[in-house]
Image (tube, rainbow, N blue to C red):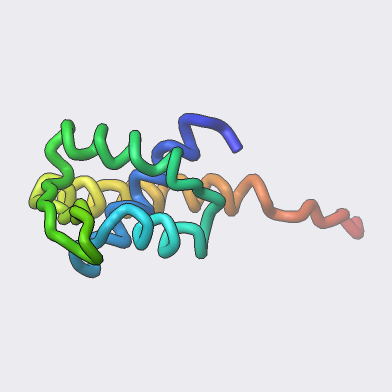
Length: 107
């Protein structure tokens, strides 16, 4: 898969997971892996970048004697997810067109 396309899809998957409520890195990776191949080492730089872009905010909470970092989508993140969904409808139409099977003419 094209790296730019995968990056955009990964961003959208992260935002989609977080649209259901705050979560932590490992859980986000597990939820997103149901639809695309993803490792935690790939996810954490994405989460940092999205936080820097203002799409996510974080908080820390102790869990099992360790601090766990929780991510929550911001209003900007929600707006980006809505925008992505609109863009995806347009992309989907183009992909559907490309994927149409040729039908032989019987004429």
